[in-house]
Image 1 (tube, rainbow, N blue to C red):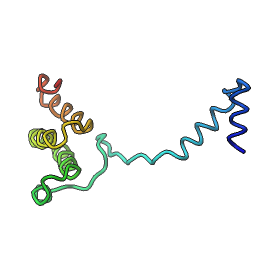
Image 2: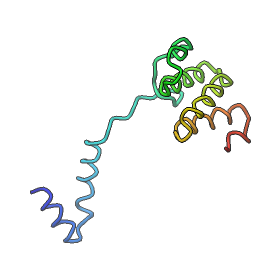
Image 3: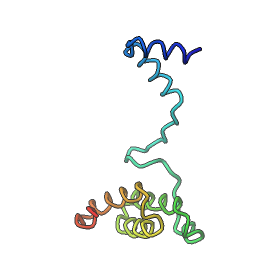
Length: 114
């Protein structure tokens, strides 16, 4: 029934009337956004080096460890962690983007552009 109404409205070239309800429907069905802290990084628990050593192939845990290092202003350590993650997941865009940001903050522009 609702699809018939949508079809009639779209076919009657009154698409401007249907846009607001569709936007509202999209907002209701969308996934909730993860909370962020004031520094722009996702809110996470602090991950320790011992946790990473216990499960070194866990990409998500290592990514959260890199974020913890960035929060502690350990950019060199975060860079090393992200370099290791690039070897584990070379096509993961979030890892590549975070690595580029860290390298940029370290003034390593040549590597950041790669």
